[in-house]
Length: 401
Image (cartoon, rainbow, N blue to C red):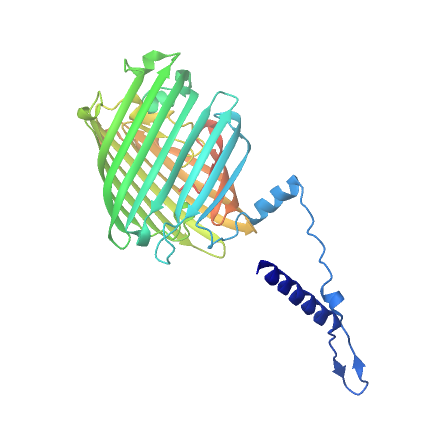
């Protein structure tokens, strides 16, 4: 039976091939009776094999196509790395990976995002971390998280504006730190969310060249917190909003029964607004405040500077119980995947509201370059400037706010 089927199929194949080979297509035009004949040999002529790409061409194609929308992919992921330079950490090699996804494909659920990052520099700075926003179907629940571990030969000026403003106070120490923050949110109404905030921070400082600046505080500190958070978020895309408002109010408690040697509380808020202007232009505004009450460890004080606010200042040079800072940024698309950003801002650290001094307000401004790595996910290179020639170069993924 098997032989009969095999021979039957072979016969049918030969008959089909013979019929095609004898078939000709005739097309008659006008009065000249011109006949065009296409043989099956021409139709069956093999197409040239696609040219093989070398490694360099594959890399170029990868980046050329990396920002194209891929709605058919459940998880759109990309990775990039390269050298960079910072006035704080000096020459280094960084790797950044970014992914967007939906837990369920529907038009109501906004894209979730995750970023993984790592860095190593010539000063001994080592960093690895992951952060993101996970949105559940129909945006009913979300988890905002940030986790990173780093070690760094750091500088320390002491506590308070006056100490930070005194160049003679500059000292060094080795810092090893782990930070984990997570907000567990449920939607109350449309863009309004509320839930629980959790946090863990462990830091160990060693080899302080001026330990007296710590005022006798321990070098190793563990801080664990739990609290309540309320969020209003109407942004169209969290990593790179073009319109909408973001308001976050977070009340965290650091009680002794969670392992804290010192009990204190923290109230923090963020208000961001985004507005389209002319073609390719977005105006973004950010206001941030942090207020600590109680016996606050030196590493948990509100610190000015970093990669998202008051860019250009050494993070932690100015630190105290309370902080308020603001910035206004213009983001302009220039050509294809390229754009620029300029910003101005100001910040102030103070021990109490009665101790707030306007003349302690620190200025900030800068300029940055944007390159669209994934669809609406930018790599940013920023150069920020501050008081008395303080400046810094920053490389990161996603907008600063």
